Image 1: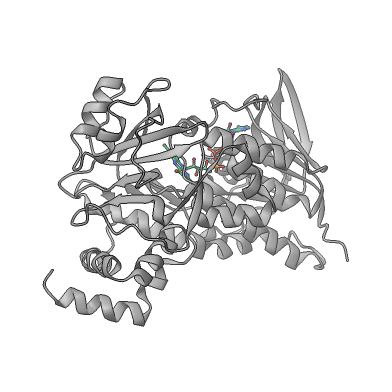
Image 2: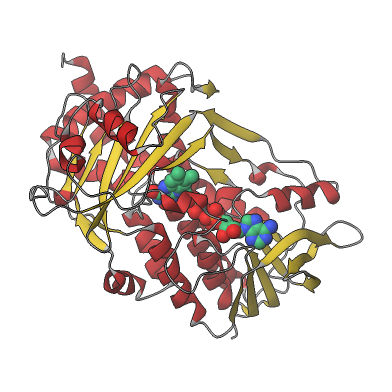
Length: 447
Ligand SMILES: Cc1cc2nc3c(=O)[nH]c(=O)nc-3n(C[C@H](O)[C@H](O)[C@H](O)COP(=O)(O)OP(=O)(O)OC[C@H]3O[C@@H](n4cnc5c(N)ncnc54)[C@H](O)[C@@H]3O)c2cc1C
């Protein structure tokens, strides 16, 4: 039996989300067109449509697993392209009370690579799929709705100065902001989704360095967590292709990392620990300092929208945007694409496989969003973070403090924490009775 459920699918956006979804759709539609407003570069370089790509972009182990499912062989291609393999043993983590946290081999590994190279390599692999067409310089202006407003039936876009209209059975909005999907809901008389925000007000600065010859042999990456709520300065140093280090530093609620090289170094020097400062103070910079600011993590509750139009599917950041310091966005969107692929396969034999697809998709991805969103809630540790602080936040905080103590003592708990942070397991795994009871004992005991 054929897995085909439609003739044409359009994906708006050729970022990591758009590429993952294009592949997920390609087995179920005759033709998949991906439209991006940017020129899609023929070599490895950042582009305007993804300004965040100049900052450190961790592809978590959970995201790598999902990408591997969608694009078998991608992991080896990324390594051949220059990605650096990291394991827990290579990661030097400094967190308050544990400077450093025990560095152990736990069987979790991931790849460290610049976002432009990750996207370039993924794009090349996706392009090999015969029925996927990637078109750059095509800015989508609007989604077209059926006269009765019950469905999205195509898009209007501008390509090299020409206006084009194209119809499709399914339009996926992987444009990041989701503005087009929201406009389509408004034009079809469907109410906007409710939005939950966590106003963590974060500012980022990033620098790249040549890896010095005297780089410490005891680690390949370093992560420094702040002593919140009194201090919000965090940093990650990670290796990327071409023997370089990328270093992203951040601060919340007005502690803004500077945009000049001298100020950047001063900021790093002023952090809780000096590990990263000592590593980079003599290293040769490659390019200047890049900055970024984000006011909030934001989650749109499309799952609660009634009469969601047929043929429309917002995905990735258009649904949920997370505090980037946790490195989750690309992994979440890849996991969402795996879910869509599974849904489409299951519906292939149905009389009308596209009927109710979006609500089914929104329902299925909620467990995927739950863990990163739970982690994002940790930003309520800062009194200035706006939004709805969970009623049990203080208890969750105490639980986490005790969990970290337990993880430092017990490698099996450490491994579980790592698997949750890498989106390999749900956060609820940390609340299983066998773990929770041990944590509760520690909470009752003095530190
Ligand atoms: C500073 C920062 C650091 C981050 N670090 C990490 C990290 O370490 N790890 C991680 O997993 N995630 C990280 N993220 C999040 C990550 O970048 C996103 O979650 C991820 O890119 C998935 O987003 P997306 O595909 O939905 O959208 P994007 O990647 O933003 O792609 C959207 C695409 O749509 C195109 N587009 C937009 N509008 C139109 C239009 N009208 N017509 C045609 N094309 C259009 C754009 O050109 C772009 O190519 C970080 C984010 C930020 C801001």
